[in-house]
Length: 212
Image (cartoon, rainbow, N blue to C red; front, side, top):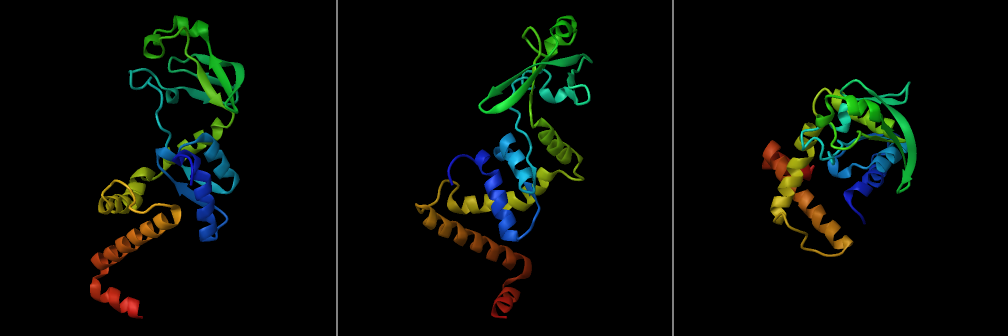
């Protein structure tokens, strides 16, 4: 594979669907896989992604309102700010192939007592991607899940992943080239699974099952 994790969500989801022989699939991944384009592409192939959005803005870290504090009202095509003002659509641009809509209301910002908590600029501007509704629907799924999906992921995925990394020295693969690395990681996974079965069932039942 080439590129970072952010370019792998659709490809790995498609492989998972093919391996399982299913028409639809729900996928859970960590923040490193978050990409708006990849999430939309997953929806197009019958995959329902659940990927938490990384907080890349400095606003929250600096004690100001984040974009999540602004509510989009689709019937009016405006954003409602924490102060109650409506930020209207002013312009649409295309950046790096993405169609982005910009919303602001300078007059309301200038008169707003919450402005110091919002922006050091003349007015607060909110950017909305043309497929933002897909990302918002995904965030609602994460928010409404009966238990934290990311906590569930840590229980299912992070334990074996962390254990295998510890066995490997938490640094790198010993082998080089994809074919050799695939063999190396397959042996690590096999060893992990065998150890887990021995801990859960015991050595005797495992040997009996293998002989059967």
